[in-house]
Image (cartoon, rainbow, N blue to C red; front, side):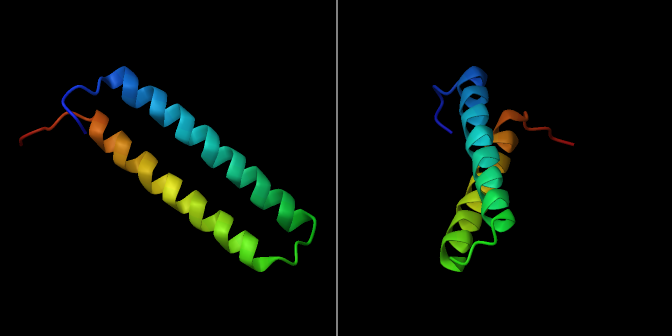
Length: 69
């Protein structure tokens, strides 16, 4: 994270990523419900969703202050 990134910047980015994650989740559910036969597309969408989840987790960790025990 750059030193010029504010908590508000992180929160905005997190909300954008969470919205994209929800959209992918809905698309995956829709394809499964329709009995999608394009397994390659499903796999690609699931990988994108996982990458978003990882990025969200990374940004959430960046928001937490370093605590020295």
